[in-house]
Image (cartoon, rainbow, N blue to C red; front, side, top):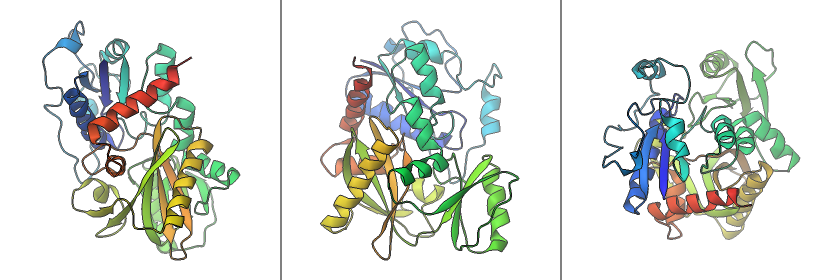
Length: 343
């Protein structure tokens, strides 16, 4: 089977995506697939004829995840054609010649449904959920509205657009970009005096933010594959909260899987994760993030439709807890994704 692992791009989660892509590429290569690792923005400048038979290490120049966000303008300057198009040279041709594209993209223009919609129009098969559910899950404000309809517990919050007046008097609270990921631009605000700086940071990344109730307690994540929840993982940062640095710098966070919860809470959280999967019309796989407060009340924060697949990522750890090693997990994602295309 010919597989393109599509990574990189120009979102704030570019570095995470490249490391996810590298892991997936190496795993599939070890299982005998004909695999290409491709940066969706930089593309491939050479002749694409017979590209799947080229003997080359496509992950050779991929770096590690830095502690801070990548410089997107610097990345844009690398591209020779200076085009603003998300899709770099050769990307469409190479993807069309594959059997499936494994999406290792995170954040804007990868996880928001735009690329999925384009691939649907072009007849290119891809892993993960479709364009509609990608868009629903990416927009946290819409997700929260659907959570309310489906009685899924979530922190109380409001949507605020840039320049819009709003009222909020509950502290501490959380400020985050409505359509962001990897906790980029997320801050915990303890007073009104801190609000302006937090909003300024969030609005630098998007035109709409969410202000929501801060839930003090334990943090968890639950992966779902083909409507079935995986074991729960608990995330306990050594310092601060589960921000960009704590997510991707090894040793920053203690992760326990299966999480130490009583059977009743375990079943309840897994059931809510499966309900979120249904409410957002998700397909193939996703990962839901949760908080558990001091009264053992569960709150769903959001759904991630293309969860990280890095050395420290949560979904691979959850799968391993039930005996699914990383290469088998990648194969399973391909297998379940292909079900979308069965008539």
